[in-house]
Length: 624
Image (cartoon, rainbow, N blue to C red; front, side):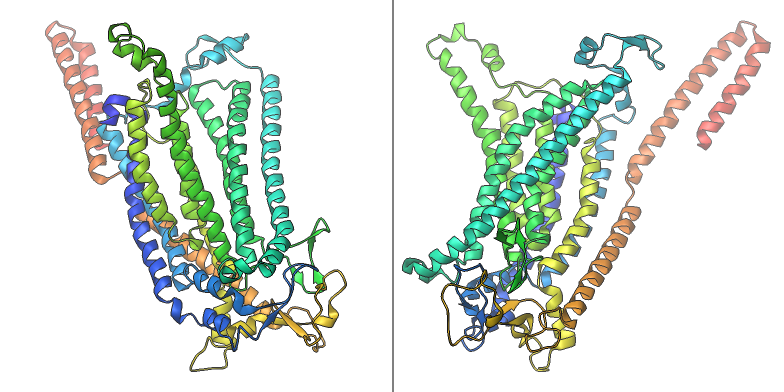
């Protein structure tokens, strides 16, 4: 229906969005099952049991989480947070990460088949998008005064000198690099915010009686993570709003030759920017937070002023889940507001001028003309929104199995909103042909490959899965309950008298000799005190081995599945060959009729050679 009314270009978008939503249903079901597995096994999690046990977690005194202002604290204060982290950090996480790596391949391969079928049904197999490259943009013709002969059309047409192109590309590249650097700078500012306010949150929660009842659930780490995620989301939206205009301006400045070239250049600029903008904070929490902390007495500092953040004793995965949920859900809500409410308000405001006019003075076609303009880049923003969402459910899905569920709910609404706004809030766009989703296919392929790597690293370095497995198989001393003692084993010992003045808490406790911290280091009475223990290197080797094995297994399965599934269905291939054969046959019969007419007219010598040549061409076409 969309294709018949709006043309193939918009039709292929809705076909892709519908197919993507159908495939999301499978990922959402499996993700929900993995989440329910974590929910039903919360009471069996030995780590959270030990943290919550007053005789174990209640007796473990942890080192302060910030300098001077923070006090020592008991491990069982993070009881609720450790229980909730099990929802996402469990055995099902590994299974779901592998499953999503294979799901992405199935989605892309089956989409190629659906696209090939639509291409045949819409009679687009003979349509070549290269033909569009011969159609110059009016802006290109207007701004390029020099002309040269086109080797294809053999006609004089305008062109942009190589020196001018080089200068424009340099300016464009510098501008994009500046804005990407600005994103990184804003992310560093958010990190500084996290480091600066953590001590304040810790002090407020310790000294405020009204917050004591919820202090177990709302830890200083979680409070800092939530507020920083909200701040980061606001910065993302502001930078997006500004950069969209900058990207269009620098693409216009480059003066692309054709409309296809213009869209491809703008697509790469916008995607690169939004990739860094949306995912940089998630990459920080997943791969950098808590990895370069140091240890008590030798902490590492950012700009020599702010102590680097530590992960919660239950792990950093719950913070990555929080970050992902806020950014992903916030983007979807904001996107629907932009797509549905803003055009409706603009149209409502525009109709105010016609309220005092009778119907015969404000006709239906005038009302339609006053609707919002969809524009040449309207579809570009729709694809960009969905591709960014695709990144959220593939790149970091190991930390949040419910991400496909959120995406499915959003897409069901997205299809209705997009169809509603196109039919009621925008003028009908000019129909255009397209037999594929274009450069977005290559972007999706690239993200599918990257997702395997990111999820392998998340499972290895962000979750506690590998340290638990190493303890289970190599360090556990209790055969009846192999995971008992894991929490005590994962915490190192620090002698309080070794604290330098900069790190020493203001509140001095005379009866306290040692405190614990999250790391694998030798105790203070060992000859290699505070250096990494052998268990640390065993865990690191296991993490690297897991990454290599998981990546190779998933990549082998991905490439095998891609090889097994042909891009074009067999029946479609047969129909295309049949049509080509019939076309050749009709042309052959037409030529034979012409030859017979000429034979009847007496031109016997020339027509015999033509007849033999025609028969040869026909036999060749049948053989092919």
